[in-house]
Length: 121
Image: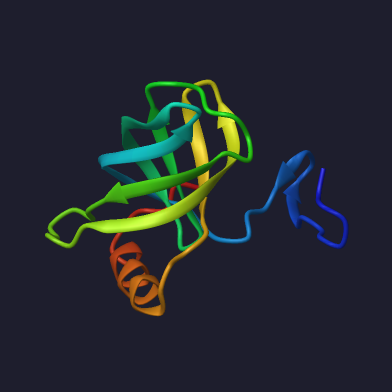
């Protein structure tokens, strides 16, 4: 169900159109979450990526709305990204994470990287 004030465009009955296209990719990621007794690090794998977020396979199921510190490097790059994200979707161990803190420079670099990838949706 769409949030109040937002409508999803449909192309087929029962299928939602995403606000931003997703692209297939595969690279390691790490997330840190804050627990009562400190931080916990989980390693994972990026499976798809968009200008607004990342689809990652993580070793544990995380709660919807959980805010995470995400660390990764795009393939063929030595730049390490540190980005705050929030869990917007979860299907078992696959998590849809929305970027909360991309800089303008990061958005530009990400758009250039995505331009060379195959669409996933």
